[in-house]
Image 1 (cartoon, rainbow, N blue to C red):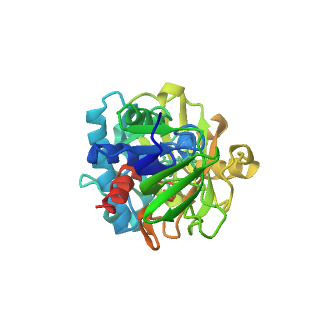
Image 2 (image 1 turned 45 degrees about the vertical axis):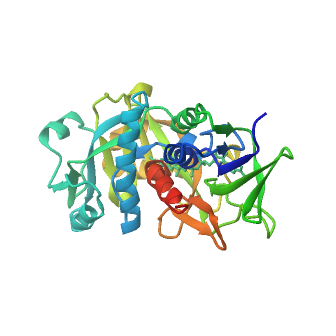
Length: 354
Ligand SMILES: Cc1cc2nc3c(=O)[nH]c(=O)nc-3n(C[C@H](O)[C@H](O)[C@H](O)COP(=O)(O)OP(=O)(O)OC[C@H]3O[C@@H](n4cnc5c(N)ncnc54)[C@H](O)[C@@H]3O)c2cc1C
């Protein structure tokens, strides 16, 4: 019989929860840890992610988490060589006037501003247009997940250890605290107990009940869209980032398209896949940005992916103790960067328990 009491319960097996469970197991091999997901591990925002890992942060906190995450992802890749991750060169376009600020926000010491794309690069991508008065950030290597299964993989590796359990299809409906112990009530009527809890429920932020710790924290949920451009990329192609428009082109050679991510401003949506679609407004916005940087690619736009993420006001991830409950930590609101920040967020959340 599986035990129902744990040293740590992690609610949500997206990339943030899966990373948290993974690191907790490494740091505390004697802890009994449960990782719960209302659906399958990795089937939330993480499933839709472009999974691009770039070394930037607009605030000192985000830069610190980004830096730490890169280090931790590198370690993870050494430990699990089969992780489906690919590296790419990177070129970021930005207005010259903002170049210095961008360099300050970059967490990679090799980053440098250059006046334009190197000739060898410009010649290879004749469909790329550099806007007037722009400069290029280069010298940075970025990475991406090749398949959208990182959270599922990490959860599986975590669950293969003796004291750890992955409980999929198990929604936690309420968490209450009595005598310092948390009771996690599931949709099936089973109640689990845990000494510590990390809530990593991504964009699922709303629950009812005043004594329910699984709480409605102060974030907003925004739609995220990325479209697919069927213009075949090569394995070694770079990621092109358009900082002034918060957009990027990322090669996915294994699937035969470039992924084109851009900013959506549709707020307060619900994390329900069937309710979130790519509309005419999204296509029009994408084409408008492509007109600026690569108009020849616009006719190759075909479908894409859409979901949502939780955002804080300043874009920093949210890693905090629930007021009055030091052993209940909320870790989420990736603010559109939760894939790249996940290991750093997990490490920071776990450090609260020490
Ligand atoms: C189209 C798109 C492109 C993106 N591109 C990038 C990118 O290039 N780089 C980047 O860094 N980020 C990107 N993001 C953002 C990134 O994907 C998210 O920030 C990240 O996946 C959030 O991970 P998470 O673990 O917090 O949430 P999720 O992956 O949503 O995981 C939360 C999990 O909690 C579970 N859950 C919720 N409530 C409960 C409950 N009560 N009980 C049990 N389980 C529960 C859900 O089923 C879900 O599996 C993108 C997002 C989208 C949608």
